[in-house]
Image 1 (tube, rainbow, N blue to C red):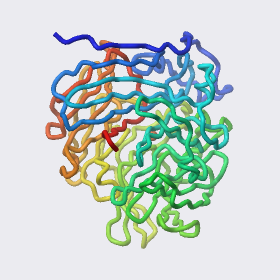
Image 2 (image 1 turned 120 degrees about the horizontal axis):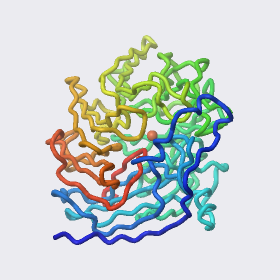
Image 3 (image 1 turned 90 degrees about the vertical axis):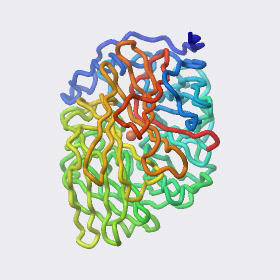
Image 4 (image 1 turned 180 degrees about the vertical axis):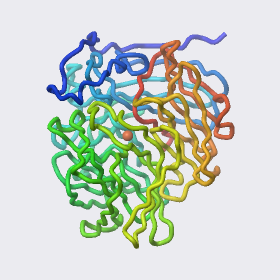
Length: 471
Ligand SMILES: [Fe+2]
């Protein structure tokens, strides 16, 4: 008989029952029913927990030696009705895997200024870049540092191995402003490339961060307006920025996203070694993209950019991107002609695309995603697209279960593309708790090879990260 996992709980703040409140200053776009945010897998958790030796069902591959992290918003004191899908204090969940065991689970808030105030503790140390420090968007790991990151000019927070907040960092004084939610790793050089923006300035700063974790190149790129640029793509030579018609309304960051027909839509293509005068802007059909899959060059005059594309977002619903069915699309840029061919690659409604990151920026064959039937942060199946054959495999997570973004871990350093495991946090509505499911890509549609059962619920969040031991 398996021993029960040991759990210790740190109750941080009183949990205030949610209550309806007016929001959005009468703007009808804020009238959407967001009661689901206080139900099921979307409810924030009250506590910071530690669980030793959570139960493992099946066989955890011994090659999985590291931490599986999941980031997301967790409103302190309960999520107010009428809130934004993306709003809430940054909370990170981590499951430590080693020797075929799950050693522990824990969750902690990142000690941003708002969190420190709510907890009555001193602010975290470190430099500042203005007052905006919301880093709930993602967790990345580069050059030995784990960083909680966000958009809008926020400086990253460095996170320790037990999820302790070490403080804000400007990368040893080399970061000229904030970072962004989705820096991209160049799989060929190991460099990290980021496109950062603030809601105050019509400029994007393109950063290259070396393998030593310091900024080696910073270029300011003027933009025609201020759009919400959550992510971008890189190829071997180029950065591809998405200048799309979701801009900031009067509410500023987060609550102020708004579809703006007047902004237009274009891809901005700039050589990674270039400057402001080298940006090529090519018009595309209006749409919005939160997350890319991959991009790569074909010959000297074409760039393929694969993304999850929303036909429309934040037009009639200001609180979540609910107005279209996001799907996998391909933009093929003809640099010679100055045109972009747009093609839908899959009929599946999906978000949170991922790939085998060892092939980022190269002509990769496979893409993964989360199938969704309503706007949100989790879905009922994981998808594997074969971009060469145009086929898609579906892995349903099962009745009463909802999966978040999956992260791919290769079977070994020289394993073929997409040969390894997918790890995702899955919410089980029947038992109101969560589990990490491990799928072997050799049997993608089969049962998970291992499930780490947590005695706690991990609220639906944004992104998943795998940090191998020793990296
Ligand atoms: Fe994101």
